[in-house]
Length: 236
Image 1 (cartoon, rainbow, N blue to C red):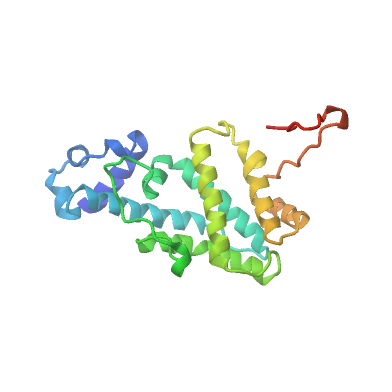
Image 2 (image 1 turned 180 degrees about the vertical axis):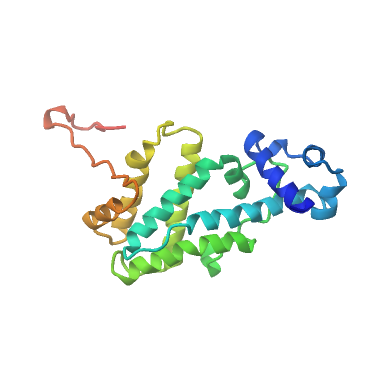
């Protein structure tokens, strides 16, 4: 492994150990036994290293999302990709923060652009390659009539923003630490979104059963009539 690759690998390790704020040319050079000039020689400084880390992280993210081969059930494949998305984000939470620019104010990256213009959400090709997997899943669902016809990119953007919001909340512990948010929140959320897009709730439930393990959405419960008070919300 060359110095450039060693710096990237060591940076990813430091990132998960201590967060992006801990990254420095001096620390990284010391950990790989090189001079601080190595960071400037190979990345033209820390901003270049941050960008290289984001690029490499998205490459690994994309590989993780595509690890499961497609099946004859496009909805199950879409759901599985969502679980893989969550798995990566929770396994590498600090990396995920850096990838999406949710990090130190001193770290600025060329990340975002308007996905509704040409289907590309990022200024880096590695981001766009990962996002392109989602419209492909959506297109397959549309082709078999599992959801209504429409703009696959727009639907993919809805799914991505849902997943992004969910994993950020789970990372900070909003849904506890036992993983129960998958069945209590995430599965019902994606189910409701797909139903709103024209999907059949029962059919979506069958697709959940094809996952390993199958995170069955928690069915909504209706309180007894006597427990309902007019003019008040019955749940929080």
